[in-house]
Length: 281
Image 1 (cartoon, rainbow, N blue to C red):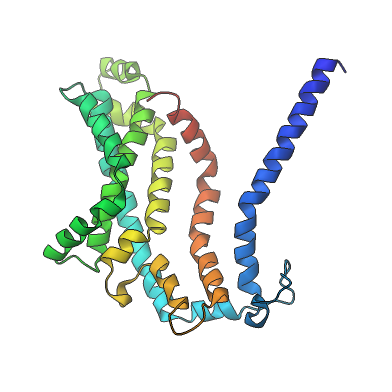
Image 2 (cartoon, rainbow, N blue to C red):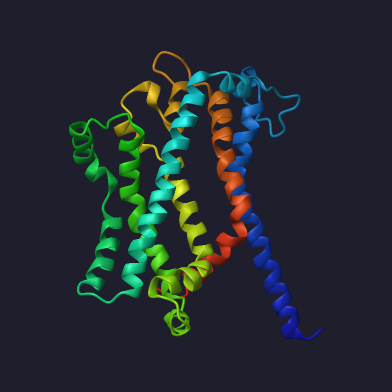
């Protein structure tokens, strides 16, 4: 083995070790959340931490699953997330097509405006958003929260999908048009199938942003029986009693299951989509 190859092997080993260490740092909070969910309440505040919850208990999970407010919050979060993901991808896709394929006056300004909108702090809009929804009688409704979440997701989705569309040569559509396709038909038959990774990536980002949304839900959902899952977690803490950390961790673990399942089902397409979308745009 030459000295150059030994250096490369040594360097790769060091990088692999650093990657494993970084992965452990990222995974540890998830492990600790699940571990705490199985630890009995009497042992949660012990001075010696339990890294393996043996024998463990399912009391925290059973308490969460028997709570009617959990299922109500789950339905609310599922409804809002479904509406936002579908509409954000639809509207963002149409805006991305317009910004990428059509030449019109102010196209550059439109793209710059989308980027500027993403820089605005969400907290600066809370008062105006609350008053707007109050005037429209949309407080504590799926429609009201979905509308605000759409406002935060559509610009990012448009910007992300524009990079994917720019990365697909327009000559492919022109060749299809030469063969007899219309402009719309060429796009849907040639370009759209190539945008699968981009659509999946943007859908995952919209799902994560909406599923974990707390601040907007706190402003909009003023009724306790219309809470989403992040708001429901507050029920384990009150001013008159100690925080039920076992319940918090069990609830958080259950809330994370859809996110983990989604990533496991689309992670390969999402990885290729992130790389493809970063090439041009």
